[in-house]
Image (tube, rainbow, N blue to C red):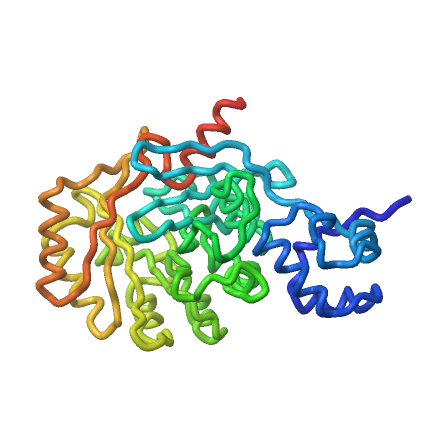
Length: 356
């Protein structure tokens, strides 16, 4: 009986070098393979024309190049594009491409579902199925880039995506090892070659993993979903706070190693009547004191049946003004793609309901 082929994308670069040497191939082939897979989006070994045909045949006999399949995509009137990917086991995950004047940011997923159960998040409401593998995380970037290229060949020099954020489905730090491997692919050469300054990891606040990330030497940007200024409110809307309350979370942020001119981004989803008061804004200015921080205010994007509402624009502006008066950089990040269900989990949930 023939042994099943292994997905070559499941191997880290050093693992691939070792395995190729065992097969009698030169270790430098690993770098060439990584470049073809990630920088050029190759879908077969036959495309890898700078590798000898005999070696391509050997590789094809031992490995496959299975990737995510694009199941559905939707385009919003504001240019935001939503992608639903199917994994090899039938599960689905989402990515969102957000175009702006000077950049195109791709928001990617790190888990199928999420165990954090944040009450304002659709993904969390659907529960947790499994972690994504490193190549499944990186493949979201590759497939979207190929989509944007219209089927034509592309290279890092002609790439359309400029920024990557791990803010899609799942809690990246709950899938720590695979996310770190994926970041090595996304920022590495060979690999996708993104600057670490253009890659951001967002967490709900897993304190031990924030500390571990700081020790790991990974240099991507860190974003923290804070979303409340008291433990009482954060306990209610983010159950993770019962394990790692605000004081412990902000202590980890204060000790997080930052490169010069880098700051931690604090994300603050504004929920009407819950966390959008003047008192909340003033508390936030005190909580973040001593941290190199910037704040993204995100007025809530309501979904059908949600218990939360979006604050009035005047409340958002008042909140922002208080932060700015205390010398914080505070930006209002409007939800994008409202007409295509671009909030995390909405398209996946809708597809699942349609299949029942």
